[in-house]
Length: 199
Image (cartoon, rainbow, N blue to C red; front, side, top):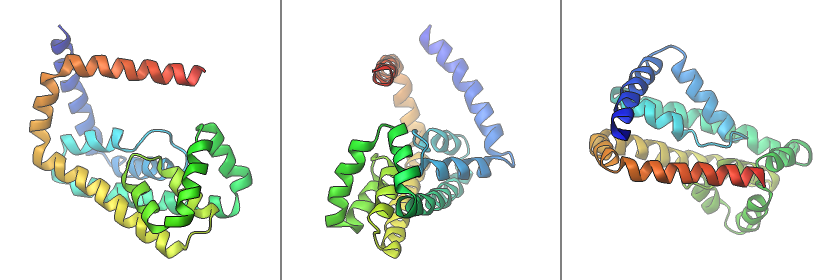
């Protein structure tokens, strides 16, 4: 039953995603999502990027490049918000996303390690807006900041593209075999998020 529903949803989702990824709005939309993700958007751009890559493998690396440019543009904006507007706009962003503690923890480390922490923050699941805002707030050398962002974001996006291009079908087959388990896991995550927001 669950698998049948999933298969129908999958066909619908794939057709709509493919249709959208071939539309003139696809790249501008993805660029904007990646830009605002580096500043304030609470969810990672991969929730849009990965489905687009999965259904349009011929454009995987182009999609990764659009994500890279959008993310870098957002990183630059967030850097200057942290540098010039932190007390007003920067704090508002952090408070809205409940990231004050993550920000101050990151600040204490980035002062000491600079490039390494910007690089790690751009590559790992650590919220990228924490990295970008704190870099501007601490007036990290702008050239070092940009270089670390380019390297880390390039590795992240193009590595995801490579894995999808190389192992995409295998990953989907394994996913479908474990659909019930993943569905339960997904529901638990949603309930935890709702609980966290409500408290």
